[in-house]
Amino acid sequence: MTVQTDRARSTAATAAIRETDVEAFKSRFRGPLLGPNDDGYERARRVWNGMIDRRPALIARCAGAADVRAAVNFARERQLRVSVRGGGHSVAGKAVCDGGVMIDLSLMKSIRVDSSARTARVEPGVLWGEFDRETQAFGLATPGGLVSTTGIAGLALGGGQSLLTGMYGLTLDNLISADVVTADGTLLRASSTENADLFWALRGAGANFGVVTSFEFRLHPVDAVLGGMVIHPLDRAGDVLRFYREFTATEPDALTSYAALLTTAEGHPVVAIVTCYVGDPSDGERVVAPIRRFGTPIADLIGPTTYVAMQSLLGPAYPAGRLNYWKSSMTNEIPDELIDTLSDHIKRVPSPFTSTVLAECHGAYSRVGKSDTAYWPRDERYDLVIISSWANPSETDQNIAWTRSFFDAIDPYLSRSVYVNDLGDDEGRDRIRAAYGGNYDRLLTLKRKYDPTNFFRINQNIDPSV
Image 1 (tube, rainbow, N blue to C red):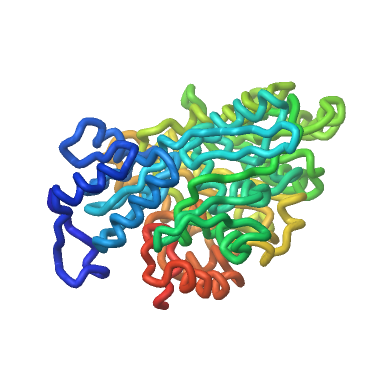
Image 2: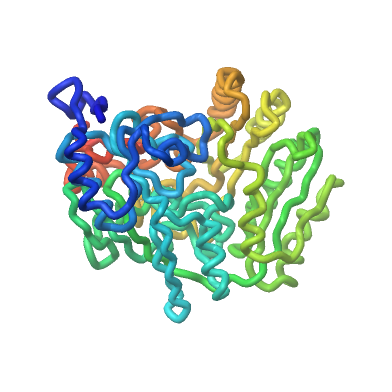
């Protein structure tokens, strides 16, 4: 099979992956190797975001760490571009490359829970729904994604906002160690005592530094929770968001609340407050009472529920295959001007599948120092994300244009910080610098140490040559 390589790294305009090379590769690779003509290729190259339509020359579906090392070495020796797929959400499309090698970790699904030590060892193909089911069998959990089909790997390496963030921080704050295949094919253990500089970098900028083949997470006791949502008509959006701003200013660690502007399955535009209390239910009832008393909601869906059910609440709103385009920034305040602009623009949303979310972070999240991990925006309380989603490819230009216009309108009221997992496909070097903030220079030094040729560059990239 013949492929185009990345011209920036090859001395020739094109190069070939010879069939004999692929056959030799197969002899030392346990998982499937898929080319464009092989059964399963089309499914394997697809990710959750239907906008991503790229065709790798070879998909290496790894069965373990040895396969990852073999795939890294194979691609490096041939100067082929590489993308790395974990769970496969990949809003920005970084999991899939055109014409190179996709290192696919989605078959690596092992989950081992040590209930006595309250830890879990997890492979990178695991999704959060799978992880939650296994850990909840022991009454344990770690902060993880609100959509069950989110992969643990991408979320953890970039941050990991969660309904448990107030109590237990980000996903990356609960990472104890990781096994990493670096650009030279070496398998390293990274922790606070082994390769500590790499461990620091993995927690917030991890995609730049290698392929994590195993994560060790700290677990916490999490029993039934009090959670759900309260829904108001969209014409009350201004009032609801002002209430949300005041309410979240004094939230206890045990409570996390998000605000969302969206359209219900029945086609009604609404504003909702999604909330989850972790702890004694009677205390939770008292804490969430102001949310339930405010205004005249269309529906009050807050009640006792399992943590797994709470984690699955938003999943149906974000199915695989729809086309997605996101814009986002963080802010520590929600000024009236921002509320008014949100309320106005959402009335003209072109797709009923689109939502705008204010994800709130406080408590344990903000008590970690800005330079204790590579994740920088610890002093920003809210992550505002425009999640534009539509089903018909013919509507792509309209939805992207609306999203950009909406973001331009709200941008003056937001900070320069951005959560790296919310960045799109190519938002430019300034936005990447904004994500890493004051940690960027240290990350650049470590990139030059661990990946001086920028082998891992299909990501929100820290370019070692700049």
